[in-house]
Length: 258
Image (cartoon, helix red, strand yellow):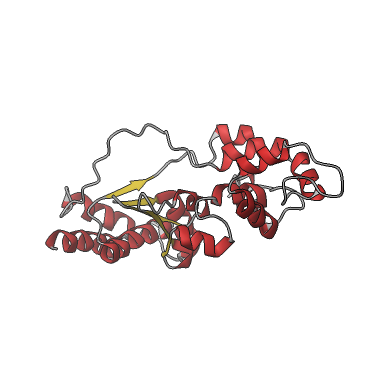
């Protein structure tokens, strides 16, 4: 099963494909061309038996904004399972036991598994969400904990295993002296985490991928050919998408042929 994170791929294509790509009437179509070509190439390369293209127009949902007002605010103006995405947030879904990997569009669809996450960030392979909360992510408007950068965040997660365990240790009364117990929480780090408790409580819900959307059953079987070839031709001519549409139809046909 191949899951395509369409909003992320579409967003990257919008900025990555030349603005000169336009329909006959002058409408910019670069994002659509880029998305179709990505899908065609990845179908040929990965050869999945199923494909589900996911799209949620509510890319800045109210519940996340209510938790953290800065979430993506700067953008307002502007089986195994493989996940096609350019969004690092989905690194939190990698799960070797369940066969979930990310193919990261930013790096030519490099495969990201738990070992890759650990190697990239020096954290447990399934701790990316906690790492992002602590370190912050300017691209998503997440400030992070002041004074705790990537190195300290990685050290804390390596020592305790999760943000929940870090906060549990934070609630352990410190002993006398210059350091707090258990080891790994210095007085300075303890103070920074305490000062950020409100942010941490909100950010966990903001960063975590929602896993109970209730989308129902989805038929991901790949068609061998277009259900309505005339409609495909009409769309391709209307928007000047002949090349990308042909490549996608050909990719589907090649998969069906084995």
